[in-house]
Length: 128
Image 1 (cartoon, rainbow, N blue to C red):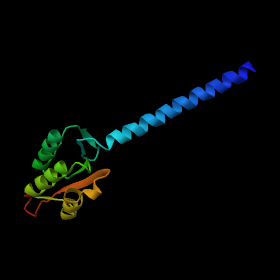
Image 2: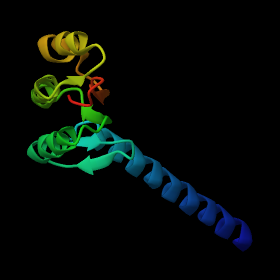
Image 3: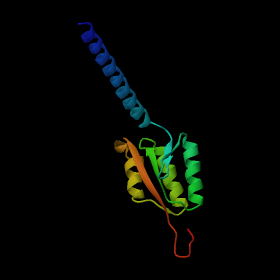
Image 4: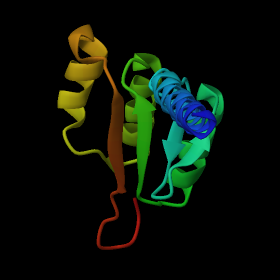
C-alpha cells in the first residue's frame, strides 16, 4: 500500500509540473501577441521597442535588402510608419493599400501577428 501511494504521489507531482509548463507556455504566447516591437528578417530577429524596429528596418532599406517584418496587428502606428517608410524608399509591399485599410483604418482586424514582406524594388539600371 505504501508503494501505491508513493507512485500516485509521483504521478500527481508529474501532472502538476506538466500543467505548470503548459500554463507557462500559453502565458508566454499570450504575452507575445501583445508585444510592442517587431521581428525582422527571415530569422525573426526580435526588436523590442518601436523606435528600434523602425530604425533597423530603415537601415535594411538603405542597403536594399528584401525582408519580412512580423508585428502585432494591433500596433497600427508602427504598421503605418513601416508602410510609409517602404513607400518612401521605393519598396514594394504586396497589397499595401489593402493592409492600410484592413489594419490601420479598420480596427476590426487587429488580432494576432501580421507578417509583411518588404521587397526592394530595383530597376534594370540597378537603382531603387
